[in-house]
Picture: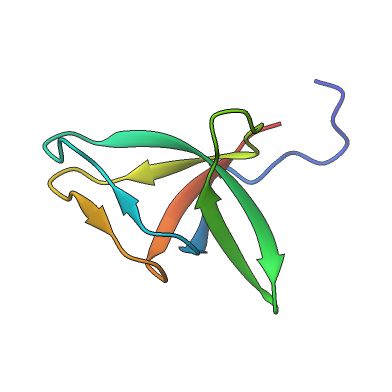
Length: 77
């Protein structure tokens, strides 16, 4: 509504920081900040006081996502 060009529904970006999940049994959504760096998309989790510009999809049955892992992200306005 009002946006000239719609946001992409899904993008892939490489993690710049490791993510650890306590309970890896379920799919998790985590707020993130994505940007372009050296011609590719990168993403990191947000801090508690920072605004998000995407949601990172963390697949089930994994507790650790290492730096450099390619992640599925969903941009938000």
